[in-house]
Image (tube, rainbow, N blue to C red):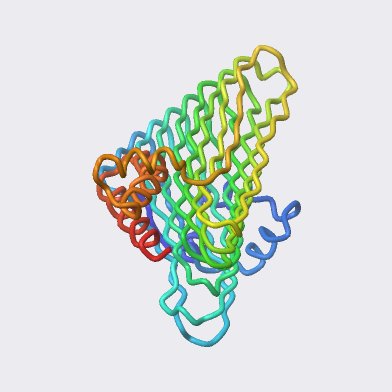
Length: 326
């Protein structure tokens, strides 16, 4: 398994990085991808050879330090998993100083080779002075399985663009995400799954907790191309509003150009159920404990999908700390 700096990998050359760097995140179609590509220098290149099975996750951490009052960063990650591999990659984006104003424009390209299973867990923990655009492009080949879990609890205004191309029959992707925002934070998720071939599947579930004057936007699109029969896809976005001034805008959508598919979508926004609070209070809990129990149970559905025990415990601690500060 090769884990190296992107600049070092580019300088060393090789067919893998030459064939894949910039191939999925097309800089001629996306202005933010073009900006990142123009400044691409440091980043991470991960190559997982055929038949490799990693017991421990690879953790990539991007930290913004207080070297000034303002900063712009362009992180870049390229992950290429060969045939029949098993691996977990964790990406963390964080700030070491709460006062530094930052624009973070990250791009991640992921190739999941035939028969492989790749878990990718992303944690966005930047300070509330951060404006960020995170673009991820994934290619899922035949009989491959890609799992993604996003955890967004930081940032002032964050936009996540997640694009998954299902290019091989038998491919499957599971895309989950949680976002917890308060005060004036804004989180925007755009998720596009493009079923270019048939006999592929996808499950997508995003959940948000909003407090204060925060706002969330979710736009999920599932595309089924002409001739891509036997696609099985489902997407959902659910939001829990803890304040009358919080706002969640959600728009799941389908673009289906083929018959013989099974696709469904749904969205929900609402407050804590008073009847559920009353039930818990009737069992001896005070009102605040009852509300916290319901809130944690709502977001736990996403956290519990993280398969690696240590990563799941770490995310659970981050989520608990954020909820305690609402």
